[in-house]
Image (cartoon, rainbow, N blue to C red; front, side, top):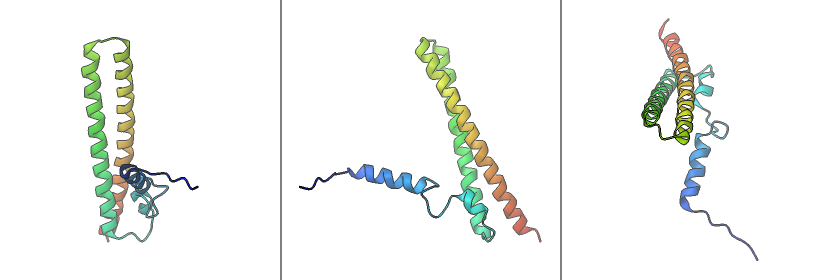
Length: 120
């Protein structure tokens, strides 16, 4: 007798989303990996710049939002559990800022490649 496992549609979608978004599983490579290819077209390099620039902006925004939320919570003084939550939110904000800095660096690297392609 065969046993069949049924997965809901959303779980399959989630697996596909994570699989496509994970650099190790994505066969096309991430923008950062593609940046090191010597034969990248100006359009590909511009796309990488746009991608990383947008990522950096969104990550900085998310970090700033977490910092504001932590500030609001810290003013409430609801006890030790609130302090722990504020600490975790501030830690997350620092991690988001670090990820944003990485994205900024990748955008600057791609912008440099665009500029090298423009100058004779």
